[in-house]
Length: 363
Image: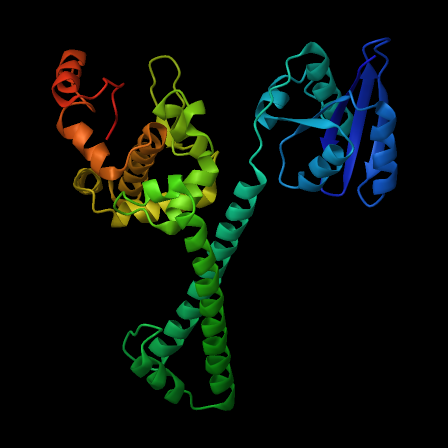
């Protein structure tokens, strides 16, 4: 007898629908996450062979670890695919758990591969660094606004002369307190960021995939780690369009009949990865990406050019990770005809250069 358990997981509670393949009768339970003893007892009673399914969410790590310690295996599913499979438009916690249970018993549960613990930790560090960057930028903007109010020229925060003028500008006790406090916060956040970036540099130096990506112009330590641990095993993507959609840089199509509409990007993937790719694309010195960015910028404006260039940069990184090649080899394959052109040209270039013919590489 196998017990199937569908779990509708929330941050502070979970609703459970369970049934066995012997009688198919469905039972329901609700647990508060503060009562972990009852949760362990329930899953222990269901047996180690129980099939447990849950939607992917951001606070599953402790639950997944608790089940693994008890000898259970948790299946994590795609929330969008699970919702599409719902038989009713009505929605509540137990109905959601029933939907997951039905998919498990029919063998149609849309499982996904969760990130490794290492990737989770690295991404946590990157998100924390991005939070520090935003806070430091906010403080710097406040100080610049104060300087403009005093008629001071624009200055860079690390500059000693600019800081000295800023400290001497206040005329009241409150102004002095605000400026001094903001400068202290700015310096403290900067010190924390340097310590964090030093740790990230060590992680990147020990990761072969990150070192490979850093050979591409515009890709540094932060971008390389973000892409490596966001994409995971890139060979699971069959086409470059799947990678673009995974990160959320794919344009949404809303066409009907004779009307063709291509709208904004989907933004379904990692917000951090999209932001970093956009920043890298603007500063990228790859002549193809730079030329493409300038052309699109003249026709469609900088925001659209930024997104389009970020998409091309992502595809370049995907090809490099997929084929395990550095930037020089990536460029050389484009020059000898292994990236674009007819299949016959690629085959001739492969024979003359001693390289195995590969699928077309988008640049």
